[in-house]
Structures are given as structure tokens and as C-alpha cells.
Image 1 (tube, rainbow, N blue to C red):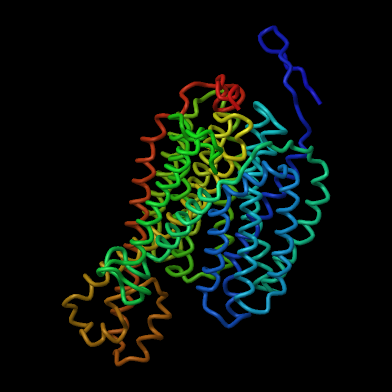
Image 2: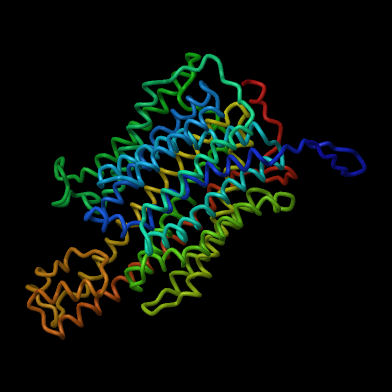
Length: 549
């Protein structure tokens, strides 16, 4: 289908393709986003079903994220070998099988394995979605499709909070994953509307590159995830091992960074010898592509950190249920979805640099306001307003930066752009969450240690009994129950609760102010984003590399 557009007295014909392929692409994105959201709000149900600890669900999330991030570049190459449409169908079929295993899983180990399969499906699916968008849409329609992809992801997460949270509370957490099976089958049927994407001849899998990248991502992710448990610098007693007293988490991160640099060096070597690397380095060689990548890492890490701190505030400080937490987060997800879709309307008026700079400022304002308004009594409306502001900035940046990356690279490298986006998103989300968790607990520990030092109501013997010198975020009820089993008097219990309340709130406020400062600092890499206005997408300048591929 084509539509004639008359501008400036001249006829400019822009091809307008059917939106049916985008419906199928959106369903694919919605499936993986819904699964992740459902897992987050099904923690209590899963714990009750398998009589296990909440860390089991955390393990499932980590396994999913690691599988998706570590093998996503490999998934992009398989898409070139077998064709993106075929890889899309295979990924959806694998996802449906994983959901069936989730629904009938008899134990926690099976559930974790099912999420591992889901991660492999996502690794193949994420770069495929980008290729399908690039193959079906161009110009402004492509920019709109990319915005819709980000909007669908946020909307699916919001729906997961609502439906999965309700099903887990009233029936069983399993039904949320059962629901995804018929939707997967429907997506497979509708995928017949996807036109075949030609395979790329001569593609060879870079085995060493795949091993180096996967090992680097896994080590960095696991190291960051265990910083709080194993120690930031010195090894804690819970660490599985130590090297000269150093934390294994720090060692894993350093080795992961070294392996990441080795992957880049190996990829450059393959390019100089005219061999195909696992990731086409041309997608990150220009200043604007590097700027978009760093900015994407920054906003993803910031968004994940806020998403971690908000439930911590609502559930631990306010003592609300996970379902109410999910409902409180829905406006935040709705704001992300709306801004991701409608930010395209500003491409005619503002440059990508101006949009990104304004969005980071908006995020900084929202986070700083959140730090100011949170109190030990419920302030729901003010908190939600702050989360909406953060969501508007986050959604706008997600679409804008992805648009810059897609349009700056040749169409033939769309799969590499999708792989890079997937790796950056998963890695930044994990690192952002882990670092803010370790930072929050460290600040909390410092606050409590300062409060109990020389406190006449809290003797040293009681500190050792309750482990107040090595604290974590706990509810007042849990603290009171723990102290009831000790030799604490009512006055000592009241004092410990007061210290806990003030220390938790102060730790959250400090972390939020630090995140707001981080959002402002992200304005620096934004300065290399395109500084011109385009009527089609954030970057439509002639790309010489299109002639080289």
C-alpha cells in the first residue's frame, strides 16, 4: 500500500506498508515482557508452592537474563543463517514450550530450567524483531514501529503486574504462564503474515567470539549480582572463596571486563583478516552510535535501579502487599509506554540531542522529587506522580536511542543492532540493580552502626544477638519478632524500631539523590547525538556504509 504525501508543492510518495507485521512483531515482544513481569509478581505464590525461599525466584530471573544476554549475539547470526521469519517462529515455539514447563513444573529446579529456556528463546527473538522492523518499514513508519515496540514492552509488563498479580493472589501463579501458551500459538498462526527475509550467504559463526562474549557477560552479571552477598572489595563470610582476601564478586567482574576487551580485540582481528565477527563493530564505530549506546546503558541502569528501590520502599518501608505494589507501579509503566510511542511526534520539532537532554533532566527531576516526597507514612499520589515523570523520560529515551542506532546502521546490520540493544539492556539492568542494592545496604549499614554506637538503650550484647551491626532491609514486624526471641526489653525494641525506620528512609533518600545526580551526568554523552531535525527519524542523513554491505 502506498500513500501520496504533498509537501512544498511537490509530490513526495512515501511507501506505507501494512501494520499487520507490526502486530505480529509486537506480540513477540509482549510475550517475553509479560513473562518477566509475571515472574516478578509471582514470588510469594512460587515460594508457597515449592516451600522454597524468594532467592529461588531471583535465581530464575538471573538464569533468564544471563541466557538472554550471553547468547543474543549468537541468536542474531542464526537469524542471518536460517532467516529472521523462521527464527521468529522457532523462538515463539520454544517460548511456548518453556511456558508449558513453567505451568506444570513440579519443583523449583524445573521452574529455573524453564526460565533458562525462555532466556534462549529471547536471545533468538530480540535481534529478530529488529530485523523484521527494518525489513518491513522505512522512514517515519520505521520510527513509529520502533516506538511501538518499546511501548508494547512497557504495556505488557503493566498487564503482567495486573493479571499475574491478581491470578497469583486469587487462584494460582501458574495460570499467568498458562495464559501465554495460547497467545504464543496465536502469534505462530499470525506469523504467516510476515514476509520471508532472505538469508545471508557466507555467514560463519565465530565460536571463540561467542565464548568470550558469553563468558564476559556471565561473569560481570554474576559478580555484580553478588556484590552485596560476597563483598564489594574484601570477601565476606558468605563468599564461596577468596583470593588474597578479595571478594570473588570483584574478581569475577575484573575477569569479565578483561574477557570483554579480549572479545573486542578478537573481533577487530577478524575484521582485519576479512572474516565476519560475532558482532559487526560498525554498529558502534561512529560518535553518535557510541553516544546512543552509552546513553542507553545509563538510562537502563537508572530505570532498573528505580524499579528496584520503589518496591523496596512500598513493601518494606510501607508494608504493602506485592499486588498493591504492582498496582502502584502500573502508572509508571503506562507513562513509559505512552512516551515510547508518542515521542516520535517531536522528531519534526526537536533534535535527538535536545530530546535526550530534556528526557534525562526530566528523569533527574522525577527521581529527586521521589527522594523528597517519600516518608514513613503513605504518600501514594506524590510517589506515583514522581514515577510518572521518571517513566515519561525513560520511555522517550528508550525509543529515541534505539531509533538512532537502527537508522545510523545499514539495514543489513539490523540484527547486530538488535543484539547490541539486547546485550546492553540486560547487562545494564542487572548491573544497575545489583549496584544500587549493594549501595543501599551499605548506606543502611552505616546509618544503623552510627545510630547504635554508644546508644544507652542498645547494649553491645543485643547488637550481636539481633545482628544489628550487619543489617539488611527488613520490615518493622520482622524486626520486632526477631527481638521478641532475644533478651530485649520493650524500650529496647521501640528504640531498635525507631533506628530501623529512620535508617531505611535515609538510605533510600540518599540513593535516590545519587541516582538523580547520575541522570544529570548522563547529559555529557548525549552531546554527541545528532543535532539536526529530521521529519522521518532521528537520523536520516545519507549513510555511506549502506553501500558497503
